[in-house]
Amino acid sequence: MDYRDSHNRHWWKSIDWNDKLAIVCTGEEDVEVNWHYEVCPKCQGEGRYVNPNIDRNGISPEQFAEDPDFADQYFCGIFDVKCNLCEGKRVYPVCSDEEVLLKIHEIEQDYADMEAELAAERRMGC
Image (tube, rainbow, N blue to C red; front, top):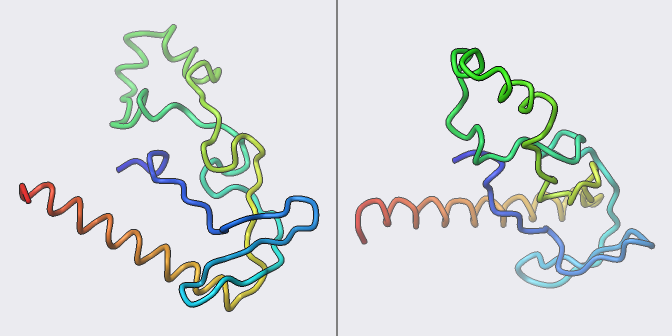
């Protein structure tokens, strides 16, 4: 799966953009935490990336050579789409509380494991 196709679930339950506070569900309870901005991990701070439908399976140098107009359009950003994680802002809120951040990562890993298991079951016809 292409990283640009990944499901975008936010780590917060609710967020206050002015006071930089967020409510996070840690599994046991809801916790209020501070947060800060970091460069968006999906678009690397560009706010956009090439539409994955264009180059998901890769593009060879031969394909660019066969169609120079396509190559020009590709490198000029014609096929770019707004980042679906930061919504084009180039930065993304990150929890400032290390303990809560670890819990968020555990929850995200559990979710990813569940999605992988469901995908494997679908491939097996279950």
